[in-house]
Length: 361
Ligand code: SF4
Image (cartoon, rainbow, N blue to C red):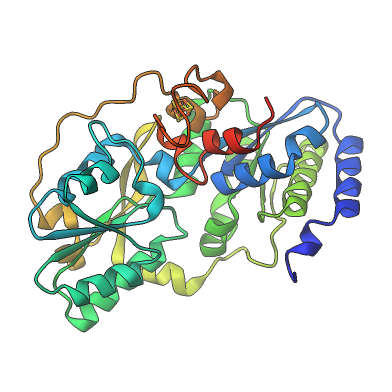
């Protein structure tokens, strides 16, 4: 298959592994920020291929996993209002909130529908003019432009019953927050591929400049990731941290101007609540005042009880990279994909789900 097979070539992979082995002389700790990378690394056994000097940790780049329980509780409360249809990506359905999940709310008669895009949600709003249709807007810079576009489209068409619970989050500010926390001594970061298609590689420049940490943007195939690791190890071994792009077929330094303009038109920067990290200023997107009639938080009045974390679940620590799923006492025991205790076991990009499916431990 074009653009797939050539990035899974075994001989090329062996050559890259051999180069990483030659280059790496000292303990090196890398974080793959993105959950998509964690899944690819686990599926292709990359951790086992790397020399013992190179350690790879998973980061907070799973949009479902980092959604705080307080925000999931809000989505469930919105779904419980009369004449409301909540629309959401499928991964969110099974994620346990503090007291319930969207799936349980649907079983209790709430009208909650799985959609594959904001366009689907908008169509549901067109088809149901007597109901309020709320899209649960989770995700990073990858999905934010499509949410922005849906709001602009709703405005242009005069659709009055479409709303967004805007939980969009931004990657560079949370990378900074993790580095400032100082819990991990990171040498390099595998920067997210899809996010960087939108924002480019420039927003990461503060990382090598201010923290001396190497950066490279990676694609999602095994060779993309090995090439990224090679770039990072080289930067670290030569003492020249930088921002490189190992995903040139998708990413350029300046990003996608059209998408960035869309985001800037509709959103303002605001704080966001991250599971395991808490409220981080300027790490999320808020709907601008000009478009506030589309903002579910401003259009509906809901009350929620104080959020609770699932007992025994260490998703927060896993998302900060300080623990792995193997450190969780509930992993593959009380917590399985069929009966998930925390979001990292639910999401297709969650570390616990990836360790469960591909780990041999
Ligand atoms: Fe949470 Fe389950 Fe992962 Fe443990 S295995 S951290 S309970 S999601």
